[in-house]
Image (cartoon, rainbow, N blue to C red; front, side, top):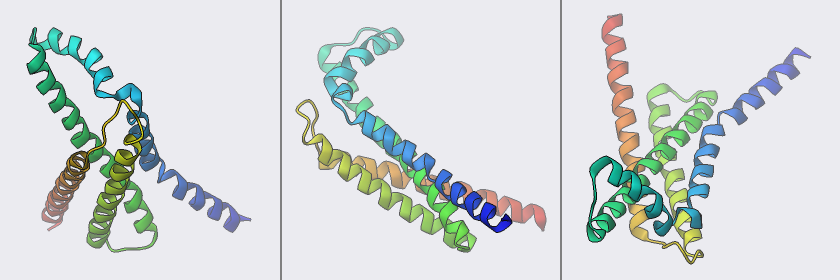
Length: 168
């Protein structure tokens, strides 16, 4: 009976480890709707911009809005890659992969999963009349994922080095 409870517990843990990745994909799915099209986001972002920075010409707002949206791609997909990193790290940890190899594998798998989500998202948007599909957005998404992973690996390496120095 105890072995069965342990199996159920580990199975539940394995499922729960993928909740962050699933939620990040859900976030992308929700943002990939007509509601989050450029016209709609412009309508609610513009008043915030004016309140924070003052009035802006229509032409300048178009440029600012474009930059905000592309920054959203970069940051959003960076977050998606971090969620996938966590899920892959937990999965690989259960498979007894050694630590530094674990970090690198989880990082590469996170970027690959994020790239796949970005491609599928742009493909989905190609069917929505109010959205545009662009390979450039996939590149921005991929750059956000790679940047997030490089930053994460750098932080991990710095903390690992600091812990080793304290132990010595």
